[in-house]
Amino acid sequence: MASDARDDVVLRVDGLSGGYGAIQVLFGIDLTVRRGETVALCGPNGVGKSTLVRMVSGLNRPTAGTVVLNGRDITGVPGARRAKLGMSTVIGQQAFGSLSVRDNLRMHCYPVPGHEEKPDTAVDGALAVFPRLRARADQPASTLSGGERQMLVLAKTLIQRPDLLLIDEFSLGLAPVVVGGLLELIRRLAAVGVATLLIEQSVNVAMSVADRLLFMEHGTIIAEHTPAELRASPDLARRLVLGGHAQ
Ligand SMILES: Nc1ncnc2c1ncn2[C@@H]1O[C@H](COP(=O)(O)OP(=O)(O)OP(=O)(O)O)[C@@H](O)[C@H]1O
Image (cartoon, rainbow, N blue to C red; front, top):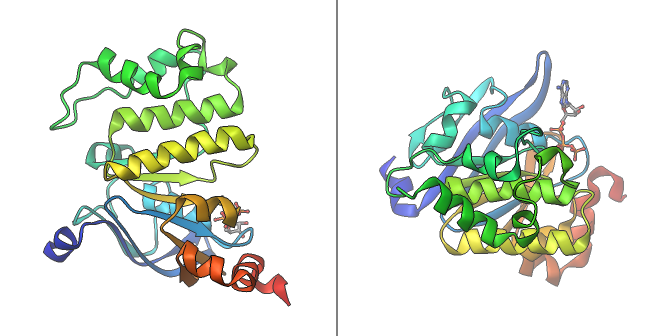
């Protein structure tokens, strides 16, 4: 898709539908995320945010629609192969508990064209961004706190140098200071061109990091706003967050 390349579109989702067996959760989702852009998915519980991110990541299969990454249709590409195409996911706090923090990071050091860095250099570079992790580099990942494990998952993305980062609800249950650090990292990744699609329950947190907020209801995107638009109209933000409960 030549037009995507011209527009700097990293992720294009067209008409994505599907769910779990007979239960349809998503109904024709369209969205794009451009290079260096951070887009947040917001909305009440159960509207399909995680299902959407899981389908984009390849963990779940859609029944209709397409997922295009860097102009290439990857709808049928298994999730495990998408990292090599430039997609990094932060879904849950996946880590190999018995391996050390350092060895967890080493596992992501496969060659990426244009980034032929030595594994230890790449790991040290990622650890330099997270002093808390560096202090725990030789500790088994199973002994990390929730926030530290989230840092480990994000440190992995620094090594993978993705074009697209998918994050499912990373601030949930974390102390504000930890959330602040993680948001700062997302901003830094955006500054070097990474496109990020993230789920964030807190509209305030989403507004502090995203360029655009997409609001979902009943498996569709019902509104799209910039943080500036939402700041100018607090009632609008409240209505969108509460969905059908606002009346
Ligand atoms: N594995 C599953 N099997 C069957 N139904 C599921 C499954 N996972 C999610 N669902 C249903 O799909 C719908 C959308 O769930 P999803 O997790 O995508 O919503 P969400 O917007 O991310 O919600 P939350 O903010 O609560 O995490 C819900 O009704 C949920 O019960």
